[in-house]
Length: 313
Image (tube, rainbow, N blue to C red; front, side):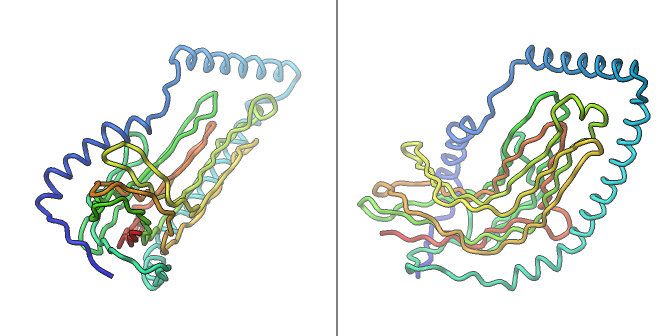
């Protein structure tokens, strides 16, 4: 096993600037969600409001006390959210013990033998509307970020999106020939995922049910700095949660504790070429009058990338 030594001044000036420019030019545009037609959004929201008012009037004419039923649904939903808040606080209180337990887990390095070990990433970031990096650190064997994703949508249609926390590492093929790079990584995640779907009350009888769903995964992508081609070489689900609102509202949560090696498939890289290895905490979410909260920053929650284990064949 060898430790690759990269000239720090060079890496943190010319190459780092090039990598950041590459992300803004290539990666960011590929990850932007298509925008909805504002006029269509307003029209659908207005139609949904009119439909609700019409349904309520008809129920009231039939002698049903819809206001009382909706008040009951709101009251019970408030109690449910209080219980969910308490569960989240307990998870935060337990985050230190979870961090200690994860720290004692020693991942088994898979064969074949590792050619290069990188213990320092180049930089850490997220993307617009894809969560926030609250704090971070880049140092040998101590690369970590505190991250939070909060999604709230009260719309008349289903919204989908992605949260991303990304660790980027520059690497150059040291050989004067095409090599196959296998980029396995050690990743540790200590976090809490929560979803809430709003109560619907009597609207549940006429309109689509509210929902909130999220899946958190670890993903490794190798980006070619020369061709802009990319390859997802590892993808593993770490946790998920889903809920439907129904009459009273609904919710669910999941604690995520992971410290292991993400094994990867190989990808060819040209001779002496530079690539960006991206390791991300990737969250796919769906909401319809619901909320998604991924907390990787409270208490001792955080995401760490101690090392990259590279094989060249």
